[in-house]
Image (cartoon, rainbow, N blue to C red; front, side, top):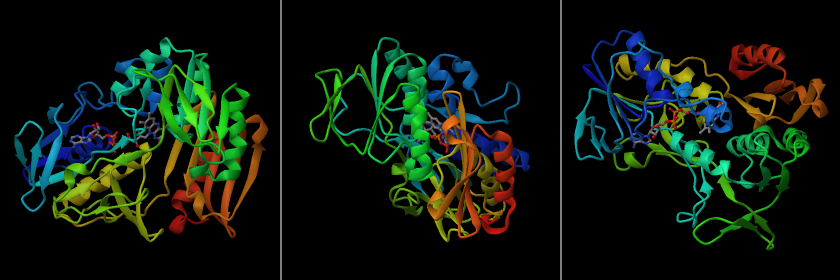
Length: 395
Ligand code: FAD
């Protein structure tokens, strides 16, 4: 293998390139990225960067002088792939031939239909999105956030800390109900309300109003919420459009959409692996493909994907770890590991939910399948280790 091309110049792409070097690959590595920027960290975009506490230089994922020898092709998207020939077509009309390919194109924020021409309507996925939102929030008084997932909940918290008047509209019973389950999510809803966020749950947005610039959001039933800025935090879809007709198998559905991979990141095409938010790895414990949109997942799997590629396309599975993520909202650190959907009970085992400091264990029968920690870093770390090392994600 003389040339490896990594498509996607972000967390998963950079870490896989690094892992290739660490595992002895001395050939040419070309990294193609649609964004013009060198790899940067996304989690602070909705937190300290949006708050203005840190700047762009603080987001860099590369340490000075440390980077492996990489050829960067930035500001140009891959538009097509011929998998059997391992040839990538780029938006500037050029092609790149490689012996091995890493697909690391991540996910893109879903946009609200019909808002394309309206100023003041934002999504948050990229540095450019964060710059635009930060600038717009400077002059805004009222913010409406549509969607109470992580991005929506974090943007609401940050904007509230910046002193904005914030309304959070969520179609489910509480923010984060999709991942934490309704019971724990309801417990945490008080976190936002206690800080002065107006929380509207079980509500659907029918339109963003305004001419030229958004001036509010209308809900089913006709209620109108005035807004200077609107943020849509309505999920993300894997960036796999450029793989259509490539010969690489793709899944569908929210959780297993993306590039279908075996337990080691190998795709249906020899010499091509996929990693990060765009990849749905097979999870033998769940018995299905599963796409994880979390920072830690991208980090853990880069090493395995590099090993798979260098071993000639044979997967080298490691025991799968349950998905882990964290979220920072106000002065609260929320950590979660496992699959809440597998649980039939959830019990608070430590602390006090009303004080926003507690640990809850989700169980299927007697078996712990997920753990939520809220400002309980030390105890959560013990539980995390337990879930990660227990056979087949069990307790
Ligand atoms: P991405 O970071 O999405 O990178 C993919 C790259 O590929 C992008 O630069 C994209 O432009 C590029 N690309 C796409 N298509 C093409 C193409 N056709 N050709 C070339 N390049 C292409 N996770 C947590 O666990 N905790 C958090 O607190 C947390 N906070 C977050 C906050 C925000 C605002 C966001 C957006 C994400 C957050 N995440 C968090 C998730 C985490 O950042 C992602 O899981 C991680 O960035 C995934 O890395 P990735 O490299 O797979 O994909």
